[in-house]
Figure 1 (cartoon, rainbow, N blue to C red):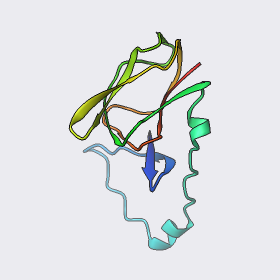
Figure 2 (figure 1 turned 90 degrees about the vertical axis):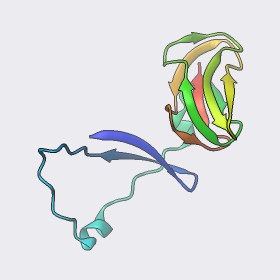
Figure 3 (figure 1 turned 180 degrees about the vertical axis):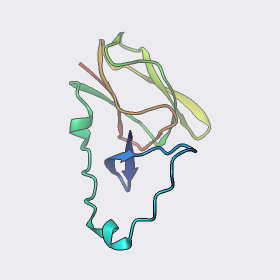
Figure 4 (figure 1 turned 45 degrees about the vertical axis):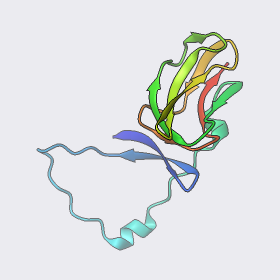
Length: 122
């Protein structure tokens, strides 16, 4: 099983997806009545996704093309945390202050909206 965060109409959901390989047997389709009884994934709030005291948000919609930090890294004010591509331009997202990376809430290739929390610092 792989865990993913999926955003639909501004609401983020945590989902698990089972990966099948070529040797796996195909499962029979799930009847529609069973689908209706499956509980919906609970939304992940921005507060629970960010664990640090300082959050770095996306200034505009775009795609993450590079992440330069990992949880636990120490960064200085102005250090490039990640690179956001928007309107065919790469924008460096920098640290607003000195700190330690508490969480990385995005991944390379992810689409983000304006105001989405990308990284948090403690």
